[in-house]
Image (cartoon, rainbow, N blue to C red; front, top):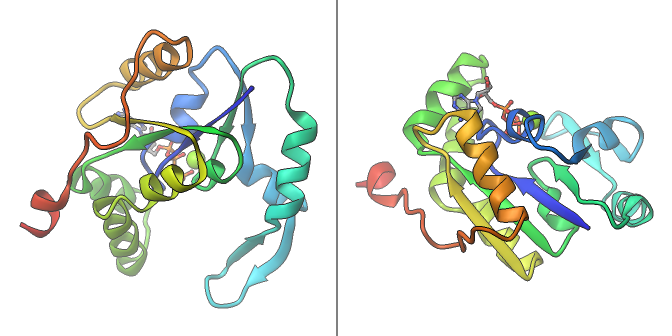
Length: 167
Ligand SMILES: Nc1ncnc2c1ncn2[C@@H]1O[C@H](COP(=O)(O)OP(=O)(O)OP(=O)(O)O)[C@@H](O)[C@H]1O
Ligand SMILES: [Mg+2]
């Protein structure tokens, strides 16, 4: 079974996935490893070959729980867990990474407008959403594990950053 761990860049996907007791499949590594159409000249990043990724992931799928980790991992399986982070907290993280003002603005808007969550709901039958703001990495990893183990449900629709971001 494959479950996507998704969210806006900087919300903690890679960090949290590494703390889970499951096999992790790094979608960005697959893209870098060849499942791409080269660099998109406008965006300056690799354009993912979504069909090749979908085929490869279907081939890797098995009875064991596998975490698909990456900001578009929700395109592939039937279940996604979306990490959310308040735009104010996300801003500090993206600044610490040295992102350009434009890239920070783009990502903060995407988080404020629930872009990944809405996509996940379009692609997946089940979507859980975790507000990671103010939670330690261990606390978030435990929530993810409890959701996967069927001990917790956090359905999409709990988070609303609009007042904070536009208010
Ligand atoms: N719950 C948390 N509390 C504090 N810091 C965190 C938490 N989760 C992640 N971080 C920190 O935030 C930064 C971004 O985390 P990470 O690289 O895991 O994000 P990501 O979602 O994988 O981003 P990308 O989509 O760009 O790969 C890292 O420095 C990480 O240590
Ligand atoms: Mg990452």
